[in-house]
Length: 239
Ligand SMILES: C[S@@+](CC[C@H](N)C(=O)[O-])C[C@H]1O[C@@H](n2cnc3c(N)ncnc32)[C@H](O)[C@@H]1O
Image (cartoon, rainbow, N blue to C red; front, side, top):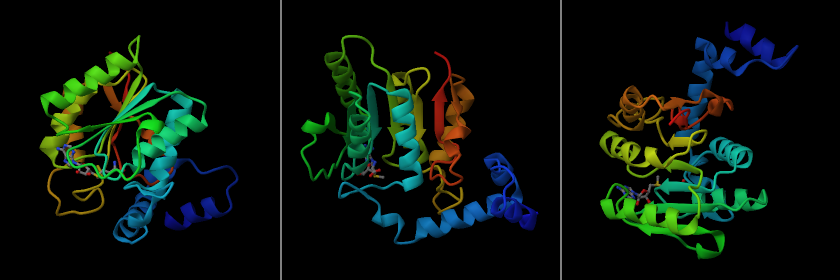
């Protein structure tokens, strides 16, 4: 099987379908091995955007770029600011596409090393699940937009199952139909990295989806073969 797959990819009569690769045991094994190598290497810790560290893979950043430019959300809400690299990336992608977009980014210990204001980045310092944080998000959405904005959300703070589940329940309501609720780092707890992590984002997504049919995993966001968010790109398909 592996030999047939490699031969097809080396001399393709037509591009090999992504599903044919990741649905085969051999293809999945290669992708998972690359994923583990990437995650454990210094390469993963060296990703920057405009000089700011970003804790994401370039594959996933490129996918965000495609989602932002193709669907042009008015706002991205992000939990987990860290150094602000991902917030700056989202903001710059929109600006380069000539699109006006706000980024609301939430962290109880943000380490921003640049002035967010010129980038339409609105930091909220607080616990992502606290009532006052949710109120601050609502206030920003209503004061900066005269009509309900289209919203994408990215959950990237504390990766324990309970926190992610709490964030899913609190932030899902902000996400517009046709937009994404991205749960970052579903790869931990053996999917395929950090097998000893314990229940985390992947398990939170499974619980959330059982009770929330408005959201479906969007496998098309995994079409670069490798993502740190397997099963975590949730698309809102109905109200
Ligand atoms: C994985 S980092 C975020 C990475 C960033 N989004 C990026 O891609 O570069 C997680 C951040 O979440 C913050 N954090 C962890 N638990 C939190 C919580 N319950 N509420 C708010 N922020 C939290 C941490 O302070 C940390 O800066």
